[in-house]
Length: 166
Image 1 (tube, rainbow, N blue to C red):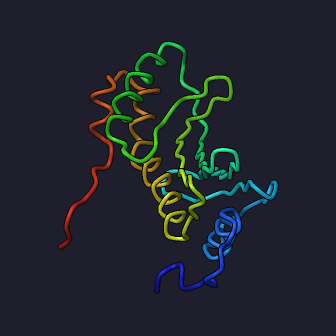
Image 2 (image 1 turned 90 degrees about the horizontal axis):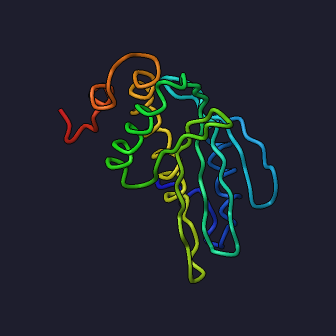
């Protein structure tokens, strides 16, 4: 059954849809404002903090997925080199490192200009893409920060996307 079949046909606010998805998945969440929600999503490697916010001004649903990382100063150049390589592989979103907050951040914006509405499937896919990307690259980021491996060597551990099925 498609996610949208759980909803009425009337238009829903994007953050209301996110809240419904969070309830359905039994994720801890906090509706910060009418246009913003924060939640915690368990991954294999760690818990991820995910915030979604709706901007009326530019009709964009913004997602930010974060996890803590505090690399030693001497490994920052390797981490930044690795971030560039990772972002070359990410088509729906990008990573950045917020040094002051000591957070790795995955960002994505769903632009809905012209009065378009977000569907539950789109929002679910945004959240899944964030967690999947964080899970895929988390081990590589750890190697970049805490070993003497180069960014290229560390990225070899990133879990490759599987195609097809057995």
